[in-house]
Length: 329
Image (cartoon, rainbow, N blue to C red; front, side, top):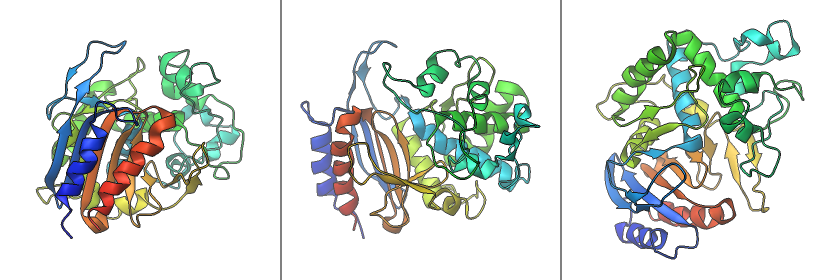
């Protein structure tokens, strides 16, 4: 069913209002059947990283944890090539001869490694995430995460962890070879260009590892093209197959339910992708401060929202997005 574009515009008006309760919206792209049917841009505020300014269709914005789903795609390419095997022990050199050696790549993708990791974004709390991204672990993020204690038997406990994603990203980089230039070329030639993501820029730590937990910059349209490729089970807009058959289903196979901190329903988790339980067959990239790429295959819909939403207001944002999804029901 075609989406109600008037409803899309109403939600966009709410999201981009100067006094919007959810925070700041920077970009919104609504794509149905591969065609953009709604698009809106805002104003980037000044930050510690530099001055703000108007956002448009050519502005590259940070993914934050939406990068995890791009890491999933990179793994899929190597699985399709026969160079990585999901159920084999993860090839992590410092785990050899330790109980961590039993951790599989699949368990890493499902966030069931058993490794200690506190995923917290508040700087006055204990946070392995902040220590990894900005503190003692920043030079070699994967080594920092891989060195944390094993608290649970591998596969037994779900724990969302940016450290886990950077371990996976280092595995990907070691299989590809060639350091930062090799991984950059691989992502560009095998993933970004085939998917039509000409703006995508991956970032690396000082050890040369792609920060697959957090750092891909791209335009809202290119994040939408990434979601569209997953909507089509790994087939790009030109009809070429990029990811293995069934890799979308691998992403959206249920692993765990994550109840929100405020007690609301929360989301399900698959393999480096989130699932919205009330929308059957959905899969989504989620990132800090309200970054979303939500894919609803049965509605032929991909919705990207990029902005700055405090955690306490996230429910307000996701409720607005749900209104938009229902406009295509």
